[in-house]
Amino acid sequence: MPNPTEAKVPKSDLFLGPMCRITANLAGRTRYALLNERQHLVAPITLIVPGVLNGSQGALYYPPEEVKNSVAAWNYMPLVVYHPKLNGM
Image 1 (cartoon, rainbow, N blue to C red):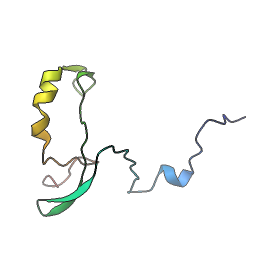
Image 2: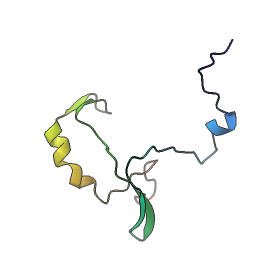
Image 3: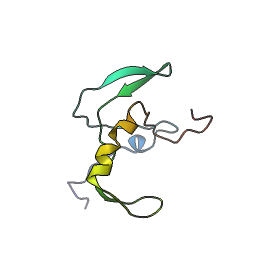
């Protein structure tokens, strides 16, 4: 007997071919802005939190002061779903 608390997701929602659905729960206000003549959705987000995080080189410690000092480096940096494939685009 299936668990009644399990979410029942239609198979069509699991894979949408080359497109996929992203749900973002945003607390801040979003806006659209142009960067390099392309329109982007802009939202306030936290990309990294202090602590030990797993990465491709193994676990690394990110101290609070390092995270705080790197915030400005992410301004105007597009966050993409997949890595760029051709000339950074």
